[in-house]
Length: 223
Image (spheres, rainbow, N blue to C red):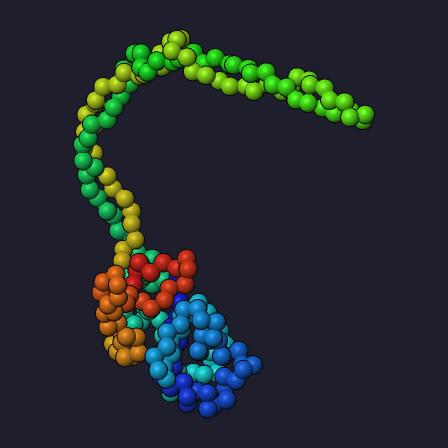
């Protein structure tokens, strides 16, 4: 599933148009006022969007570009010819291996010890309306104590290792093709998104290639 990157290279010029006033539906789609999935660099701003509906009114502005990570970096997709998705056959051999197989026999394993139920009587004191107290039996304290007496043994299945021969397999999988990036979009993105390594107490880190990814979106197809 694609998502989009809205890039504004001149926020001051955009604000001067009056198209992104406080009440404008464009406001959050351009400067990311909610703070989600947005990157700012001086007078420039980029924001990731899952829907570009409503951005048509800004399409003519020279300092607003709507693109995608697919266009910026290129991506892999299933090949389609005459509207028909293309498939190919993946073949290989599953290596041989040993696996444990039960012989149908069982042997004694860990011992099973007898558990004894022990009740400890308790008492409680009650006071009647005249202030007299009486001691009566309370609920007993019940404990289960494991003794040293062996009642039996856990039964453990006897197994033997059996060799499973290597086996060929054949799967039908999508036929993928690489789609090249749009160089001008990559250059625009790189001119705004600063990936200069940052050094902190934990070491030196390079910002990720994608500055933001909406939750739940798969980006494994992006090159």
